[in-house]
Image (cartoon, rainbow, N blue to C red; front, side, top):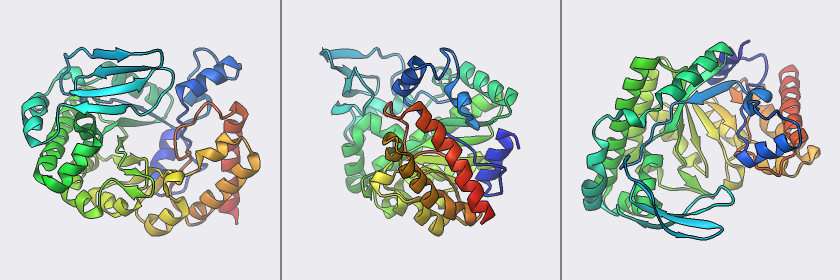
Length: 363
């Protein structure tokens, strides 16, 4: 099978010749492997490890595109800036991490309508990376890879503008305000998608980032999800399906209670199933494997340990029941891969997973 055929089959919960592969190493991880001589200076790390898909097309959802970030404070380790979303964030300069939320211009319906919404109504070509999408799509076609349009959906578009706290308080205290934000961002995304695809062609699938959980809990109840966020998801996912495309949704954190609603909205594949937050691939497969496929769910901490016996145990427990049950599965950890992971460990992880999958098929 080609990579494109393999990915399509996995998304459709059909048999594949081997597990499709997905990796997401940190920049610092790639730098380490390059320094050690495992990967060439200009070599594509995903191609090096045989990743089966390519992504591109992420839209710029910043409220004020012309705004130049204002530096308020800077130290050797951090920088505090006001950005185009009206958010004041403190970021680490020495490593990647979630920024500290200091302040937001948008705190409620009034500030949303005054500060942000007027800038998010019209189509603006500057939001669309036409050239990057074109190149990624052409590269995928040349290498027979599956090609995803990759971007964010309303939950990940709202919180950079008002922060999680104001957004979640709004869900409880003024749900119509948050519904309006969901609707506004859904319209923004759909209108820009239609322009991009009219000029550059449709992708093979859609990959939405929506981090809707933290440890042991989702950010909202299933009822709140269905009443506030799901309508935007359904419109986006229905549009993807109208083009003949499958939908993969990435969500860090514990989101199992939201999965039925996400399936109702039209999700075809769940990624990444974060173990330390409480997600468990075999459990999810037993509950939902007859209607969706899965990508990830392998505890990245076993790779960080660089202990092959722990990796063996994790792969066998997680992959075997899914493959035996005939479910669709794409190999990935439950997170991006940090620089503590040895190059040889990453190689072993991919190769051993294929062996475990083959053993499960044969048993």
